[in-house]
Length: 148
Image (cartoon, rainbow, N blue to C red):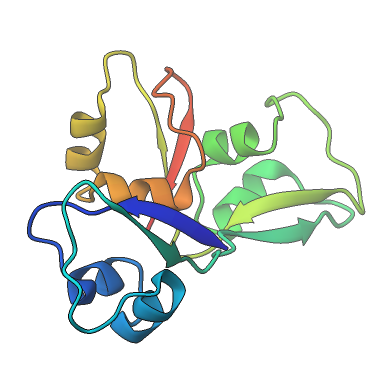
């Protein structure tokens, strides 16, 4: 998968390749950049992005409940319910599949008044990193954002 990135002032192939965990050589190849070309702020480059699977799929076993599943996987119970579109009084059934965030994935529920700056500051990250894990960031109260 690929993403279009707008070159910022001070960017270099090395910096962009570090941001997207690729190599300067790969960026040159994808974008037809030669050694003597300069990156111009405002122009766009195509960068490869590795889609990262943020979730494990868990198959519900007889006797399971969401609270125990959340606790076993060190996930906030209410977030796990919300992630799977469930309410606390919903039943889960054997063989039902639910999503569980992988161990190093964290979730943040957007609050009223949140801005990109306040969210990225609270999560100690930047917009590029946050958008890498979230296809749409609306900042609507209740939206769940994922980050590492």
